[in-house]
Image (cartoon, rainbow, N blue to C red):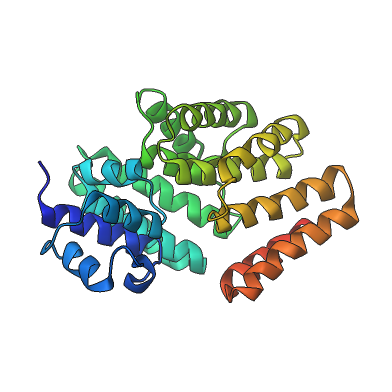
Length: 285
């Protein structure tokens, strides 16, 4: 049985990873002081308060318990937190440092294959920051081999797919995507992360001019983001819908849809997101 301190620490790490303050995580059901004591392992929360707090940090119960039960959870979440921050800033030098860090860990302890997978993840971000750098083919093969000998795809596996998607051929990528969609539709497990993965696959299909597969994701993703609280996912889908419309239906309307999504980031004060998507639109059109 997990200790209260482990549960609280995992909650805190996930909250920070999602860039949510203690104040934002609290509400009328659970106060800041209660959450603070809970994160320090000094107090428990009732089921209703705990579920409310998880919703406030944009984490599904399944995602939380997957992280809690991961024997390397603290190290994994720390690594993911670094990735998230560097991705937000598009810091290529930071990714290079992270790659070096994970490589050193793997060389020191080659029995922990996750360090090698972390290296591959960091390399994928380097390649995304600088498109002139090719993603090593051996890394693509190693990820595919790992995924298809792994019985269950949990948070870490979804993160792998969600960050190497642009380097995978469409047939294999679509095979992964349909499996992710099937699992999340049947079980609801890791729904938030699975949705982001599918949005990434949708984007890749549009960029690669594969209308049939792109249409599959255009038609199936809305059911996953029907909840109005899914603001980020809904706005990202809106931007991708603009890309789809621009390419295959109406260039003027497609551009308008992309601009609508960017304006929402502007209105919310999400300066980096607005800047990044504005650059993406400029490059795209």
